[in-house]
Image (cartoon, rainbow, N blue to C red; front, side):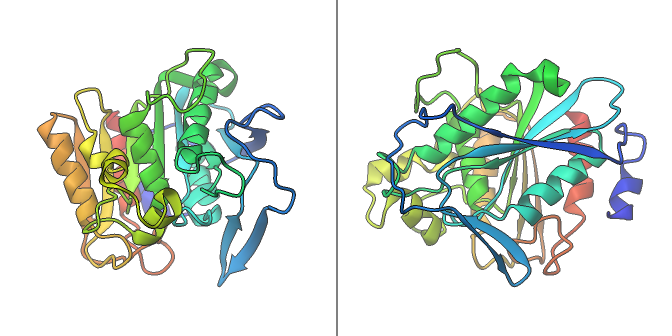
Length: 303
């Protein structure tokens, strides 16, 4: 655990050294919206040079990490790992972050969402958002069980998971499945870490766009999934992180999102670091800027 971060935020949160993890299915059996049965489509996991990846997700789940011995109700944060909409980086952009949040006394929820695939989905471009809306609604519906404040539930995403989190942030009320309980999926705040924001050619990560929208999306579809175009007065406060030397996702993604938030008078904090590249998670791998966690902890306090 990073001592500098814990020292920097000492006294801000109630610290908890232990976490309790449980895993639940997002959807009742047989009720995954738009699903196509395909017995040949089998989930797999692999260790990729020390990085744990999951692919071919057909049954989405939510890993719930609750801090122990919390004195009172706390924030809850839904985490969307990245992986170019083709894999999920469930460790350094998922569980590691959840455990760090638990150390701050914050409840964390790591989403294993369905990755876009015509093999198992009637409409692959909406399936990840279906899962993310559903996860947010599950958290909000069960705030008493999770000891979470109902108006302090945020979303956090990395890379392509940042695009998914940004889509939830700007299109939380888009009807992508039948929300029978009429529960809001709007996050109360949003944290986008080296995110894909836009689907326009000059900004996007083409691998993520191809996976989500196909190789030749029309202009209307590109606009629909370019989140900087959908910021409005109801968009929640945002925290943005990127690195100038990111050669995978253009840091202008963050900058354009920042400008859209400013134009709509939405509270926003952005950190563009000189170095770090892409995919560094909490910053302790690949020489990433670990200090973004200190900045985030202070920002969360202000929320």
